Length: 110
Image (cartoon, rainbow, N blue to C red; front, side, top):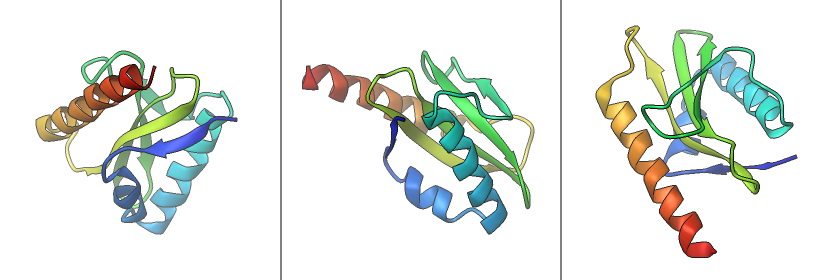
């Protein structure tokens, strides 16, 4: 089973979800850790290669962006509430920056 590594404020952001959304996010991340697919997800290639979005519908709409293609861990890049059908540019930009920073860190660690 892979570890979950939280990037930036993503852990704090999930902690601020309503209880049911937080619980469901955790359940979905556990599936990803176990090498399975979450129940409701979609790829987010605009953020980066291998980035996926977990979609949680509990007391509103919630999203958890993660990348699991690296051997060591599942990296949670960003988590946020969603009020419209379209993902806000600011959320995509923040996740993209965190993804690129993660790639740089992983390259430097080699």
